[in-house]
Image (cartoon, rainbow, N blue to C red; front, side, top):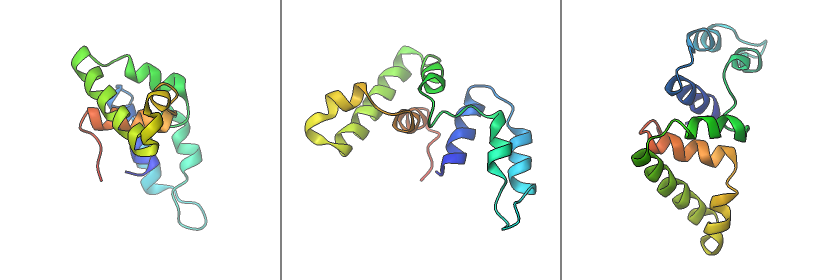
Length: 110
């Protein structure tokens, strides 16, 4: 999943209306033909860079989901640095937490 797809998937899971954003990404292009993502993504929380936003999303998990999320996040941290996954787990960045959350919710797409 690219970063835009991740943000939209989490926003939809959180109950945000992303129809305008999806429409804009498909229909409004910059002069090089790329989606005008900066303007259209302003309506979508930045789960990949804002720890507060991803924390708000994590708080929506029930106990079973939170355990699954923790396992996915620990797995990501082990991949990054096998000897220090305990410290990395606590200080994981928003992007890693978002990936683990998407995997926990079965929303992650390769």
